[in-house]
Image (cartoon, rainbow, N blue to C red):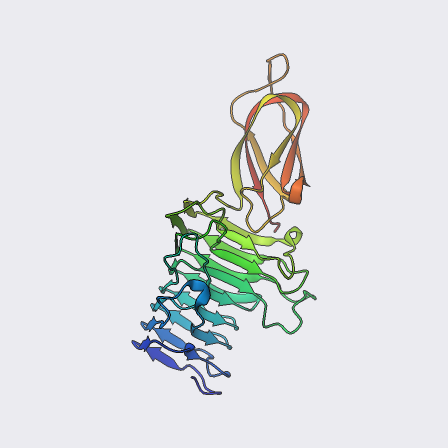
Length: 322
């Protein structure tokens, strides 16, 4: 247990073996600038199912911690962090069990909205990153900064025998009106083995409140790799759209690609791939205009042509606005 007050406490090259409830716990503000590096946390619950575990390796209340190069074995959660300004890098935290289609808990829980943090170069193994504003005494959005200022880049995400509804990245608003505002999820590896493919890597837990996907801004999700995942979510998304019979309006449902239940507010480009032909099979040189936010979940874009056409185009669309 850390003291109530303090600054820049350092914990290096230590073993925390079998803690009852917490490995490092902060009851006050002494976790400001905390450095935890090259430590090993070994849970006493390694034989238990994920849902039966209760212990947490680290909990923090203050800002600017550096959590680097640690190995964390089969806790309920690796870290619950209530502050901002974190550098979280080079850690391997794993939380699975041997249950087929098993439950998986959050490894890293961030409880500030504008978290101003990086999660870079970690091995996130059979657990998720959960972003939740549960420590906000007034959790509904009321003009403050919403979910943003988070960079999740260059990590390895691994899942073994997890239930197909498990997702590696979860946003869980605790009040209405919140939205994504400045988020980068790039160059990560997502992989699932031994069981049915995971549906997707991202999810919104709307059990208390939904995420307002109509207000998503400055969101980048690209350069990731997917194995054993049904939906390769991306933003922006470029995909081939084919119409085999002449249609004046081509409707493109993007919900399988847009992350976090996103809408489709932007079509940034449309480029024909090969000739476009009319009902008489004559090549036409035409340009469509796009209308956005159609269909279920407002996740479709319509391409409107001057006449019925068939062919193939490359469409680039986004779930966010600048």
